[in-house]
Length: 166
Image: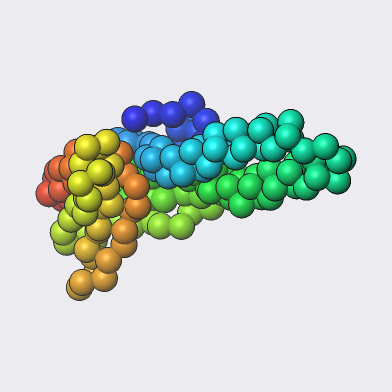
């Protein structure tokens, strides 16, 4: 579940953690979010290569290159968000960090979690991902999207919640 590059390296988390807080899980969202950009990139590369060779005028060729650059502008943000997002489970809380400097989007104490639900579609069950819905504060929910091994995370969250002395 550990990844070598992301918004915040596991070794850099000590600035965000309390003195007795231990990291139990640190992972990016599931890589399935990159499937569509990758498939589109392959199809576009084949189409651009074919069209570039078939077209005669420089203007036509540059228009094809423009289409490829347009794809990069559209797919780039998806890849950026994936590369700079992290789900962190510690002994005391759940964090969702994003951005180059690890902005905290979710900071939820484990003790505030009332229930943990897993949402999976058929394809998600096959490739091992799903959404984890955290129910807290009288019914409010926070969803962790595209989590790898969501049932394992659910089990660990419930263990930590039940072991919390607060």
